[in-house]
Image 1 (cartoon, rainbow, N blue to C red):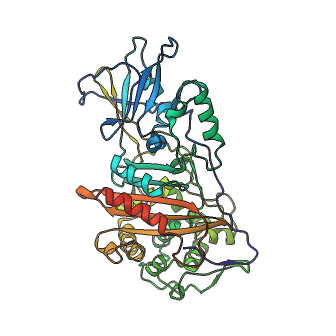
Image 2: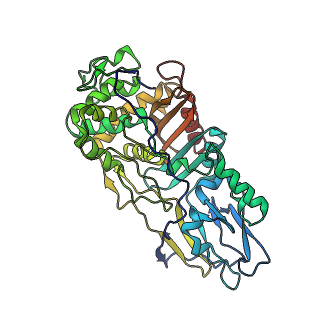
Image 3: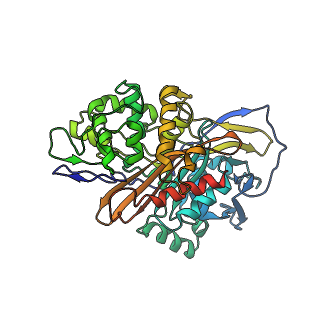
Length: 461
């Protein structure tokens, strides 16, 4: 799902490979909910992180008065992008760091409280198994509430292997950090890279909102190939039908020529404005673990660079979480909801706290008409790539694939989608899988990302 780009203009691939889970996040504090107080459940040791109502962490006595308890983990590698780690020798990261004061044992040896997450254990396992040992990530969220259901990054690590301070822990820590496949990096939240064709959803939304086209079925007058402004660089599409294709057909056939031209016609300023409403260029987002910024280029952007952002390349970057949020806006009638990975904190005294969200109030990113039009167009696009063929349209699944080739030996495939899940929930999902580039043009190479999304949605059906 990538275009053939010819000429002298350099197209960047992955621009930002960012740090692992933040270890210095501030506490995601909240207001006490006095109307919802479960029975107090004090227990010895450290507080726990819960998934699906069950703890995925534990603790054991160390015999050390200064550090009386050591963290243990259940399915550590599966939940590492959620829990982070707590180590006697290497500090903490992820929720372990954000809620360090809550999870720490008191002087009497009783835990201060537990952290209840929004993660769906079945969906988390489905995504983890589908990605396997490949380098990739997957995020699923409830489009209406913003609750994160899946946060998976592979290859992963088991935080239990270095939670202590013995020589074996030191060896495991060094091995995990020295691994060239970067298992300590949380690709779901902390790696931003070129999103390729999945960004065309934002481009299409900007075009409709600006009145560039009245409907998703209007002819776009897009040459095939399209020559980027002020250059000799040409951008093609994946099908002969891409010449003058409508937005609906351009999404379906991966017509990079159409979206590059739309981006050039809109200009960087208008496209940036729309992207920022979707969540780009926000460096304050936390879920409550800090999330890396997804970036639309700022300042003076040249005409050819603006056109390249239209196909999700150039200096444009996005995290898997951000691309799931893009799908969520379309699924949720044009509204953007702040994402959240914590349902509540249960204190040992029986009180509960609801987390504060970092993304502000619910925002109307695009009109409902624009969102509804793109829902229809994306169902058409998804019908060609889902394993059930045209049934994707009937089942309410819509989405867009993308393929970005970084080097001769490296490429990333994407799939961003939404679906009507069980109990009327609207689910938004994004998956990316790194690997060798496809050997030919067109859809080939995106199947792995599509398969990951299908497994996630199947687990929640």
